[in-house]
Image (cartoon, rainbow, N blue to C red; front, side, top):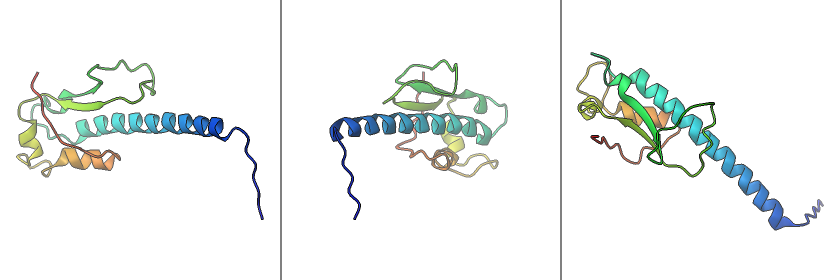
Length: 121
């Protein structure tokens, strides 16, 4: 029989929880940055405008990338493309990519697309 005695279990659990939260947050940041790069790679190209219009906002603030860790936890990440025809491209109007290439790219990067919303600015 194995018996483990842990003192201050609540304190230890809080430490583990904080470590997990940090690591999960970091993983989401990396997956989001990779998805942003991949979306630019898979976006159909005619003029290059749609491909070059991908952007990332965190809590409605465009981040300044000084290193790979953005240092923002519990953030809302938005991958944005503001060209007016991005929905048409995602619906399969180009022969270069099948329909729903945005959702497929997000899923391939470990992200779950809750809804693809194109906002005009």
